[in-house]
Length: 243
Image 1 (cartoon, rainbow, N blue to C red):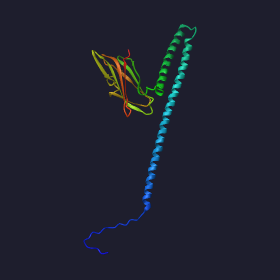
Image 2 (cartoon, rainbow, N blue to C red; image 1 turned 45 degrees about the vertical axis):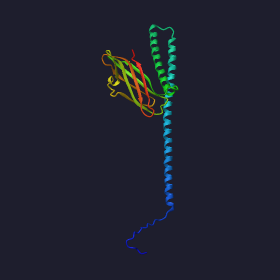
Image 3 (cartoon, one colour; image 1 turned 90 degrees about the vertical axis):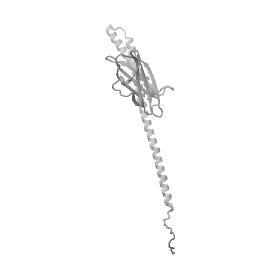
Image 4 (cartoon, rainbow, N blue to C red; image 1 turned 120 degrees about the vertical axis):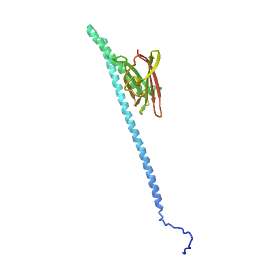
């Protein structure tokens, strides 16, 4: 064909026609997507089964501890009954028995508290769920104005995952004629922040020693728990300072 000088010429590209190439690529893409989906499904099933197994093991351990504690309470109660019904013994033996009974009753009381504590976690009432302050204790120690504090936090019923947040502890009292609120970090040298961090599944204890400043007369202890996450909770409790 003659070429006219100065006219624009179109370039032609010849490609081989492969009707099965596009079908094959589409098939590979579909197989890849199916493989990813199946892998994700079975991975999720495996993670769920692992979590269920861990929870079942934890539940069985707590139930075993409850059964052991209940058996111990029964045995101690029987021993107390036998000792209290003892017949003719001399005064020294009687005093020894009384002391033993006192110690056994203290052990029973402690075990009953532990049983109630575990039952409260594993089988709570309908309205008693979520983050809780189970116990706040203040015990005097040797030395002027020195005390041991203990705060027990629990996650009741909804303990399939860990809960974390901050625990703020304040001490309310009088400094002369003025009412004063002191945070825990001002009284416990091991605490440096306004809140104590916590992270647990079933329960966690915050404990330590504190020293009251001279002239400070404590009246109350305020505890505030603030959890983080999608189901954040705020729990507050105030107790009177033990006399």
